Image (cartoon, rainbow, N blue to C red; front, side, top):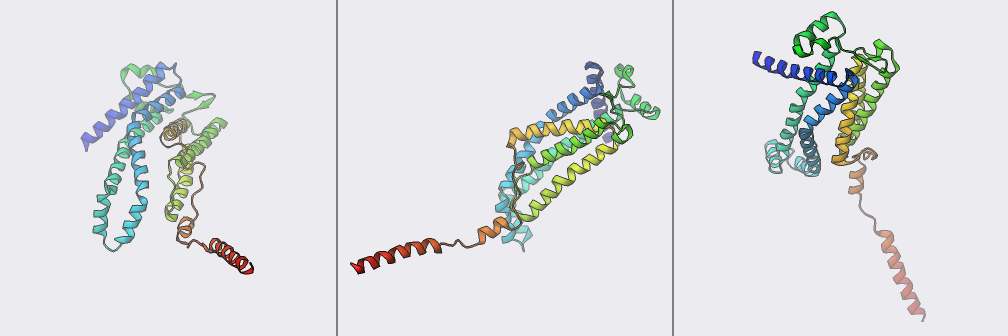
Length: 281
């Protein structure tokens, strides 16, 4: 446990001091430092992000076959798992979790670095001084202002309009990213869950941005924009301008018999008319 804690603190300090290095190199502009730092972190996790998206797309393509197998072996879970393994679905579920496990610590270190760098009281500054390298000690305290907004304060604390604008951008960009990332689904339950997630996730992060330092909201906005750009090059606009299929819509239409009566009636009428004309002649 102690070894894990030391490793965690080592990488956290590295991220924190990398942020301070950017701050010093970019004319002590903390907002610009957050933007560049976030872009670099997203580029660092780009290979795992791409792998995760490819796994998600492949799993979506296999959904019809998975649903067929689930119906066929609904009373035999063991056989179902064997069949899912044969088509590679089980392996993709496990490999799809790995990129997230790699990205999660980086995001946490990045978040902690921004929060600690924005220390604005004596106790926080003392904790910050314990984690920064001696070469950057002269930078403390940092200049947290961006266009008159104190990035160390929450929008509620600062009362600055720009802070509330950042919160709105967090919600909007996260909704846009979620919409582009979510594949369409003909399954009513999955479609409903997707719609719920597309609303609850942006609102949750918007609430977090409202409560914490505005620098964190800036990080969320930049991270979402990078995610949108990456997603666009991977899968285009996705379901951004598409409607989710209505409950039972696709299945009911597929199950309804095709009515060929009118077309056959027309043909039959034509034949009958032809026979009547021959008789008259």
